[in-house]
Length: 309
Image (cartoon, rainbow, N blue to C red; front, side, top):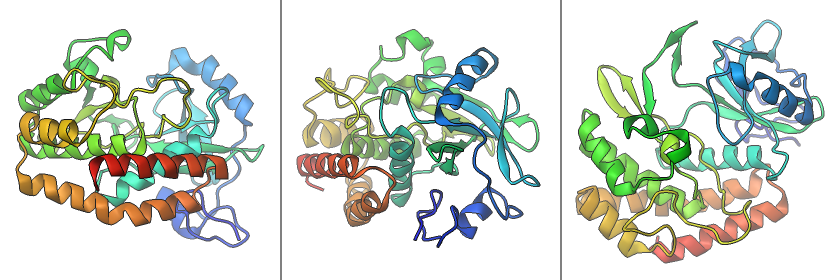
């Protein structure tokens, strides 16, 4: 029996579940294979890179859904979805990112609609709906923290978590709420091994006349796909990027820097602790290879012990 790569629910002999298709569009009855192999997608990403507004280390494509045709279609502008094919160096990134975003959603972190689509070579491509678009062409105001800090793509690692908190204090309409969200995301990313949360991976969005943290994106377990000495956080925290512990992450960052109450911190940690069993279940049924699943589980077990959650 197949599992739907959008919902992780059984879908019989079909590639997608009706629930997964409905998330993409209420009128979508089927979804055709993406009309490109993984290699062809990488080639298209390279050709279209100069025309697109989305950038980064991972090759990306812009796409819309053709409801009548039942398929994703690539485009150079006005795309509603970002597609990320299999990477030519790092293995299983689409499966990794999709799983990690599912884990984040279980603890209430706001994530856009996301999932995976089968390509014509039956490789899996990750998709995520853009949260900076509304309607046919309307753009929603979003700024990443590189812009807010007055830095550039080349200097996106030259910052600290302490300074990032200060930006939230200065920019966000209700900074106490967003600092609690930030603390939750920092703890989550530590636990699942995301050591690449640089400034461009944090953004604010303007919604309902409020400036607030944007939905989460680019969450993946980078530790299990990298080799060599691995840092644990992209931006320095208490002058460190590795050997983090509960004292640094919870007491120093949560209590002292984010000024969160014990109740807020305890609620965050208890929510994560209560979700851990479901995390291991999701890892087990995910589309990662058995080798990658085991690496993911082992890292999570190690990190939860460090934080005693």
